[in-house]
Image (cartoon, rainbow, N blue to C red; front, top):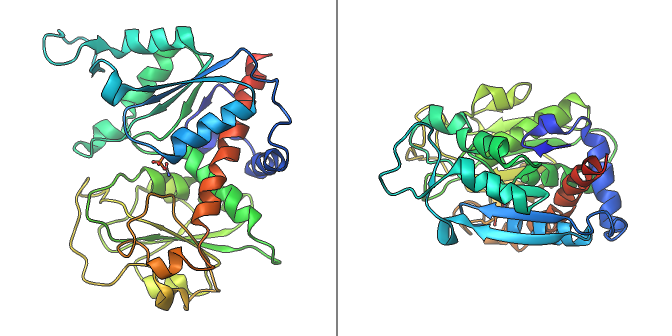
Length: 322
Ligand code: CP
């Protein structure tokens, strides 16, 4: 593997989950694999879980880790080609990425969308250029349209907590928020769950209010609904997340109906486990009673971020040695 950007970079999801759970059982089994190799983590936006879990995964593999907060400590980046750089940007991504590639064997990049221009965000121009110019394998730490380390984690968590016969019903539900948030987490979750459904691992439903439908390319094969109560019936896992509109790009509409996940709605489910990528706005997206109760998987889910990162970095290191 020399890039990890979407579900297409993992040929078989069941095998990846199995490998991740084996790493969880024996975290230091490959502690020499990354000896004398360096992972560089580049953040253009804030992070708690992605930053720490990816560092921890790399340390379990014996790697050295360097972290660069480009938003605070780096030069202002120019990403467009053919511009005279006589404005506020100081360094072009061509040089910045190439230099970081000289110092590191593997790089990770986090960059959020601007949520102004859908075409620009969905082109993933920044991420593509970074991968092109750094010339080493790149792990997405979340890009404009996807968050694959989170989605692999979510699949690991679902498989790990499903111990009944048959397939679980997994429901992704929109939740309220005060800000316009990217579609990266729900896009990515949908993309991974649709692939897991194809592999026969689960059944997948997306439910959101009118106007919040995700891009079709991420939800193909899913049951899509605007009826929350109906969708929650018989759910085994409920994944709660806010996102802004894809159609009316980046916009947030006032929603009259109550979409916050709480114990009353949980009663409609098959005693579902409740997931969220975090950070979560308590009693806005998800009730405190759920977050502090027995159905919440959010901490176990965040803990599994290490094993998702470790399986990806391990595969990249194995590829470097070939
Ligand atoms: N879920 C997640 O990616 O968390 P951070 O933004 O804190 O990394």
